[in-house]
Image 1 (cartoon, rainbow, N blue to C red):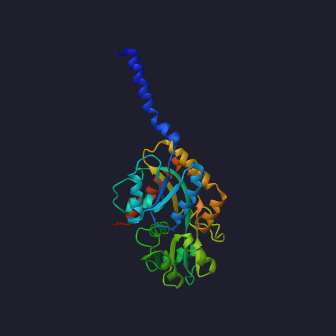
Image 2 (cartoon, rainbow, N blue to C red):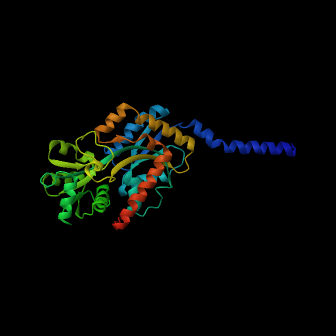
Image 3 (cartoon, rainbow, N blue to C red):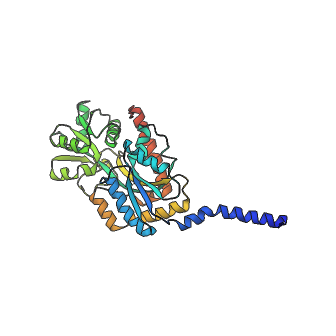
Length: 329
């Protein structure tokens, strides 16, 4: 059958239009099968617990099962890479931290770009660090601690869970902000370091607050300041760095969610809506507070704002890593 030129062009235009809307139609149907959240750490840790809390709530909002899968190795880069290389269809998501989605970009040679190969969905939560010292150290507040460090240049010992860790970089940033110097003592995790600080074997640590809460409450170590804009609900008597005389010095570990790059905006919007609903649930907030986490500020739960924040964090920490010449294999 022969078609007139006008009829042929009409049919071709219709076909092109149908093709152009196929992604939107797909997004409208999303999700039609289970969604997997990849956690780049072992089961049972703070990131895994957070992901499982969200998975339960998101599953109810989206009408599909949300599965959490722990993919460990290479400081989290293996789990992140799995999502980077996945189809951009909204069925494989990444949940991670400042470490896995910013710091490893300055510490390792990656074969993907943390800032451009993933699409931000939302910041989920954050946990401020805490500046703690051994009980016998002769300083009662942050200004006295800084004065003591300056009077003993290079002599103080600061425990860290390995080179390039959040505590290591926060310590380097603290040195720069205060004009002090001290030695870093690497441990296999925060637990052994805290034990040594309780025993007076090391002087100080700057690590996520949940590592110290029980010990501070028990009086076996002392908390000097919270490097954040607000005080901790679990330790309300500890001043912020702004209040303690070191304004603008902030350090926290934060948690976020991403999808592979080029994921449809409609899908990102659906996922963001489900995440925001989960984070507004009082039960979720309460359970996060019990593990030392606080729900992310509402503005940073927006994809665009969270993406801008992630870029700002990279611009903050990557120069510190380079200046300290920290390189990991």
